[in-house]
View 1 (tube, helix red, strand yellow):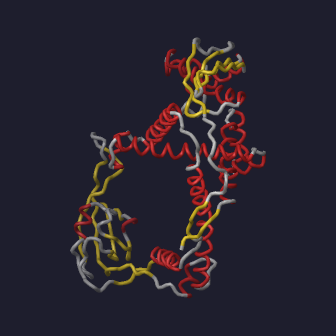
View 2 (tube, helix red, strand yellow):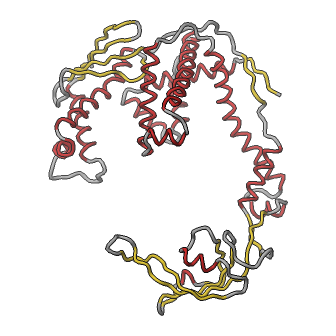
View 3 (cartoon, one colour):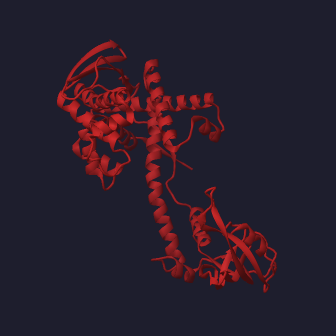
Length: 433
């Protein structure tokens, strides 16, 4: 890959990238296959992927896809080769179209990641709460466990079925001469108001008294459909007796209950000890992240100089594009998102600007610390990063990043993590009472 770099100003560079014909051809073939067989399991043996793709998109749209594909493939390798760190996405332009068996040249205008310094590299001082699990937290989890394992007992507070009651019903349901086994039983708990049965069935049950028997018809959607596409209702006859009313009772957590309901725990003390240990493990992970956050937030206040506006602008576009992509994936419009959050477009932009400002200051302060400490990325650092990011698939994911030229950006993140860990290890920490 041939690359020439031109300096536009202190904050921008222009890369002129020429991609060799073989790499262009490989990416174009991938593009055709991706478009042609998207959503298909088997290829069409009668036609080539190129023919199908062109039929789906047309020549003009397909050519744009191919141009973007080759440029987005090549730019990470170009940036890594020239060791250029950027903010946001490159601004591409081209004077020719990507074609098989031909070199392809394009230009990419990039915004440079600024190299800023700190006013001091001394340890930071933070105040953090004590890492502990309180008795109240354990009590709450024991209560939650008990609430999720309830028993049902006879409710004698009233004798008429009300909406929301759980009634123990005896049922015998038929359709013509055929008995419907799924709704024929001597005893089945049924909760009214839970939309478990059709409305006409529900209306008949509400108001019945304990011991009462009633025969009535109700409709149920069948498996055949009418001209309007809606299922045709089938009519069933049922004989219902209310055996009793039920109420859910939260269990009393004692040794016998724990021994019967909680695996590998024989007593309440065993249960509480397990809850405390598991909660402490989870809190320790959160505690480390929180400590790292407090440290880098403190470090960011030492960043010297200002961040150029062009850097803010590039990061702002990147953040907005990322949000729009997330919303599109969720099938939510920007307007719907704002309505859900009860905020205006101006408030959203203000929040994003604040978030972006904090992120940039923290990132650049860690970059400065890493440079000051002379930190380097070792192979074991990469192994640890991918093991944490993709447990069980770390080798495959790492290979994907290496073959796509994106390891350069991963190494940048690893350097920041190492700098943040060093910062936390050397911090002056006070425990909040």
